[in-house]
Amino acid sequence: MQHCNKRKIIKLSGQTLVEVILAVALLAIFASTLSVYLNNQLAYMTRGQSALEAIYLAQEGLEASRSIRDIGWEYLATGTHGLLYDDSSWSFAGTHELIGKFTRTISVGDLSENERQVISLVTWPGTAGVRSIALATNLTNWREVVEPLLAGNWNSPRTLSSINLGPGNQPTSLFVRNKIVYMTAQASSADKPDFFVIDATNGMSPQVVGQINTSQALNDLDIKDNLAYVANQDGTNHLQIINISQNNNPYLISSYRLAGNISPALSIAVTGTVAIVGTKNDAGPEIYFVNVANPSTPLVLSTLEVGGDINRIHIKGARAYLATSHDDKEVLVVDISNPTNPSITATLNLPNTNDAMAIYLNHQDNRMYITRKANSAVNSPEINVYNIANPDFPTLLGSKEFANDINAVYAADHLMFIGSTYSSEEFQVFNVTNPANIEYWVGLNFPQMGMDMTFEDNIIYTAVRSNDGLRIITSQ
Image (tube, rainbow, N blue to C red; front, side, top):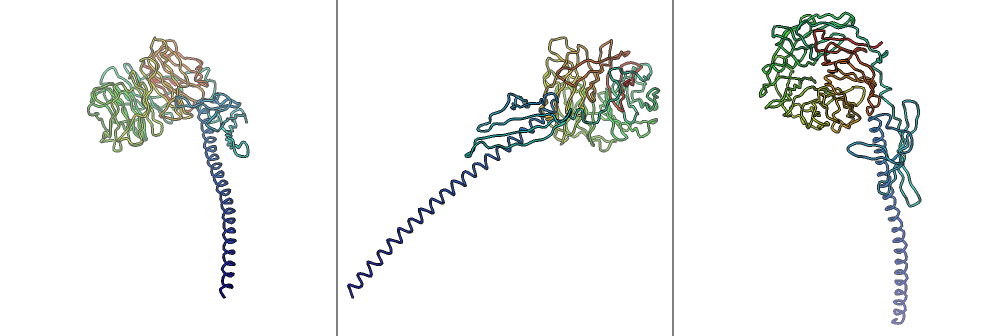
């Protein structure tokens, strides 16, 4: 019995050894398989991460190309390019760009005169060779594609008519809507009218149909619905609101003093129920945000101190652009999305110290036109053109010396119009297709300097500082 039991024990021990060997073998196979699997998964994850980075870089390449197009169609040159980001703007540089292990190439090809295809290709080394991601888009020369505002031959403008506002009235600003022109003026005495309504339905025979005397001088105006908002020279009635529901019977609704400021109001712009009023340099604030939801009782919401005259205000979206006399910040960009807490998001320090006098944003594109007082010093351009695709980082496109004050500016399509103190041609037209090479076209002689201008239906309306105060100009 004992002998048999011994043999049985020996047999069981042999089986256990075999099982251990088999288990170790199976474990080794499993571990090997798991290692291969994990390595594959790691490689897959690495490839996936690289692909995501490549997609991001390719998308960035398209956005950079779009930004270059916005600066100017001529900069979106056909060919193969790399990209360079410098001083808050993109440009093409070289034939490709190295970003770590990635190589990015931008290819631009013509599809038509005003359309180009952009391909953003990103390549990088992979385990099985070079990998790549390519994204494409078509970009248009929207300055030419958008509906043009101008017609006829503006290389040969002509004066349709002019109108006399009476002796001693010197126009300062104007606004046109449906061929009704609203004008402000500085009068020679307090008993003369300083706000005019002119029916220019017949551009060859405009007629003053309404006028009122608000004080002695108004410097600027803006129109919204049936109300005119005017900036008054009187430091005790900075903001005045006029009912213009009847062209032949405008009347004053309210006059409002901006607390903490005794200087003249120089400029005004209205958005929604808020009027932005700019004044001459004062010990207090120069920019006021006023709630005009109830025009009978305006109410200041907030203010900003600048330390300079606020000569003109232009609004686009959630930003207000201001032309000032400040030596270090001739142009201000203000976030007005919350008028109770506005903030300056950008300033432009233009060369030398000549004041910025006028500002215009062409709604057809992302260009801002700034004109200034004359300065005889070298590099003191009176004409400046900026790209504001990113409103908080304006980029200079071009400038031009003019040697005369430029009080008014307007732009449409490929042309810029200015009103200046140049005694032989107070009205001039420039080709700004390429802002880096602003080209003079033609000019007209006025009795006095141009003070303001606006545009409607292929007609330029110009305020001229003379009795013959409104000039209506069109193309041949």
